Amino acid sequence: MNTSSRANFVSEWYGYRVYPKVLEDEKAFRHQQHGLCPFLSRITRSERPCIKSPASQGVCTISSESNGQRQDWLVCPNRVLGSELVENAAKNLFGMEPRQKVLLLPASSLASEQARRQAAQALEIGDRVLVFFHEKLGGEISIPATERSPEIAFDMTLVEIVYRGGHHGVGRFGILEVQTMDFHGTYRNAVKNMKDALRLHGKQFYKAIRQYPQWLGDKIEGPNKANVFKRTFYQIAFKFQLGAARQCAGCTLAIPTAVWDSWQPHLGKPDMTALGHGIYALARPGEHFTAGVKNKAPARIYVFEPEVDSNSAPNPLKVSKVILTSADALAHYALRVAPEAAVGSEGLVGLVPQRIFARLRQWWPDLAF
Image 1 (cartoon, rainbow, N blue to C red):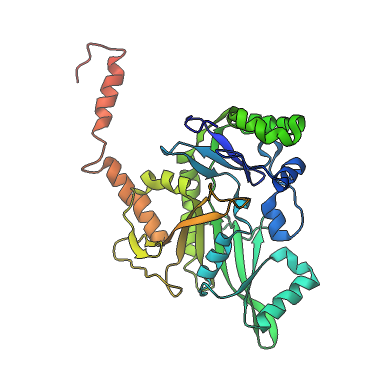
Image 2 (tube, rainbow, N blue to C red; image 1 turned 45 degrees about the vertical axis):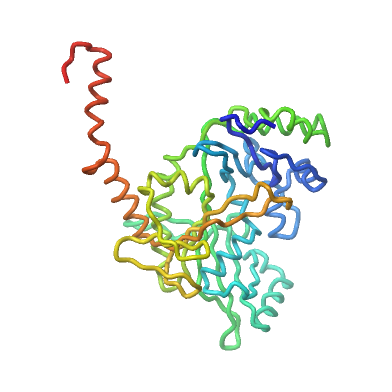
């Protein structure tokens, strides 16, 4: 399979890798044939279909060289459900030690007496219990709009269930956001190609797409980097600020490596302080964060990517960095450092008159600078 092309390709379809390697096994075939989402199915312990529209059905990640190297770009937030990333982020948010046992349940599962009993038993033996709200698992939690602020909805809201005063009750909440990327063009053609190939070739589908990888990139254009940052920056800053509230355990943004790399120009490519063990601090001047479960950072950024070379299927998610930060720090780099780099004393604003002049000379050759 040719991986040197600058084209963009569907890289995971219904959770299983189709580019640059092709995973071929019975489980992948069944999920792809029946349109099942392995991530929703895993977290609910029942077979669940992909909930995306027909034009993007089953597309989890897109492989692109937009950052100068081939990377997976997440296009479906459900890709993280049931992953170790969510459990790790949850423990970090609620100040748990890595070895602490935690029962993590979809909020909607509490309709089952068995799930409620499971939660109560976990608390009895000293384990922690968290339930989470999600668009398809109990619905999103949101803050209503006011005259001075917009409505803000959370991708995943984690809530601790506690036992106190002889009763089960609700403790603090935490926020987990999953950052995806939009792509120009359409997935419709690639999805149709894969569905047709699966229908026509059956279990020879995998051999066919190895032979014709261009099917996976039909009409898919590059990532819409600037628009995604502009569209999400305010919401992320807002939610990071909520992470500092007394009732909130904090806010975590899970962002694919490719998307984090694409954000660097918008943040002035900040230098982060390494705290050891893959933990970094992104702080504004005068702000300090320390590593450990007792750190005071109101916000965290988990930078992750699928392990393309893993033999496990679906590929597990690997966290490469945990960044301790805050809304103030994000605003400082996005609204002060990056603009200063572009238009400050050493910025590029001086190029603007030259470019205006060069453009006008195309139509008025005798124009003087």
